[in-house]
Amino acid sequence: MAKYSEEFKIKLVTEYLNGNLGYKSLAKKYNMPSQTPIQDWVRAYKTKGIEGLKRRKMKEAYSVQFKMDTIQFMIETGASFQETAEQFSLNNPSLIHRWMKIFNEQGIEGLKPRLKGRASMSKNTNKQKKKEEKKSTREEELIRENELLRLENAYLKKLRAFRENPNAFHEKHKQRWHSNSKKRDSD
Image (tube, rainbow, N blue to C red; front, top):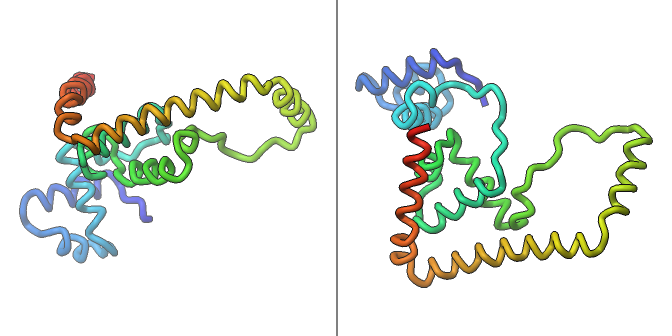
């Protein structure tokens, strides 16, 4: 995917908002293969202003709880990926789609961050890994597995309750979502 400068994005967004041209015409005018990035930029600008158009310097790491909250919000409210991204101040709705897909395939365990990069070739680290593996007793493994099953069970109970009566479940949690979004707005 091509990287566009902040100035270029602002130029196209203002040109679109001034009403001179539509998405398709702008894409054609600036030799862009698709109108989708322009639509995303306009949407980001409308929700976050110029900050929404800036490129992030570093990838942000999100907690498992944050990922579960976004997935749960989307399921409970029936919001689209875009609406959910706006609710949680995320630039990229496809990120939520990826989390949802991983959760459906691997459960909560799949949402945990993984180590990046290549493993060390040092002999010392291999010895350390073996020692760490030995330290992890069967009891610790069972406790960990139990914890994951509890989390998954709680999530499935909420999902079942929502499917049985979506309106009541939504009203019950509506206040919490609004208070969370107000907190984010004041930050």
